Length: 271
Image (tube, rainbow, N blue to C red; front, side, top):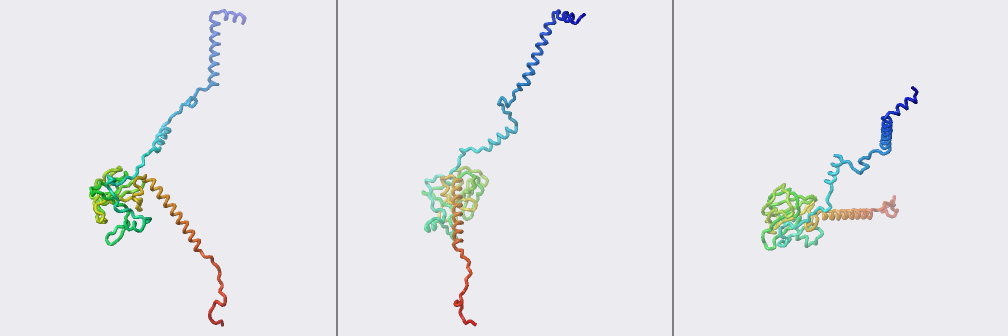
């Protein structure tokens, strides 16, 4: 049988053309699939704008949130250390070298034949009623004890580095280590030996390190801002003093010259 006769016999069967059609269709679909995969890669999460969150990025976000400081954080202003300031009065002021001689004399304590500059203010009751002592700022009680000279006393340390001192108390309502809030009762004003002439009073101090500061500069103010202003003032004063010292040093410098005495300046006989 010739090859032509074989093709005619094959094409004459009923299933030949359907088989050819299906084969061609399969080839076409295969070519289309290959074309799409080669020229249109699958979209990634980045292409769709989806950000993948890992444990590291999540933890970093939490740390950043914890470290964020709210700009609207409340800052305490120092209040009077007595419960009803309208019924209180200052009997002795803070000793300040900028005061007049008369005012400085009034801010001196005399005790056992010695004089002491007054390192705080003494607050008394106008109507002689008991004076309730309160915390001027929130903080931690670092000392609460009875002193044989100044009576019961309390020291409170605050976040800005200040320490407020309350002495000449007749009793204590707090103990060392207590966390106190602004306005919390600390005790009642009483008497002491050191300032016996003052009678019943509260002795109130504000300190930064070993330095006593004027309480009246802080009352009603943001303590941190007052400290900043005092530091700026101290730095300016130091710069001025340093400049004055340099100026005085230059003024006092004498030019070095070689002085020669004339023969007539010598007394005595020449040999």
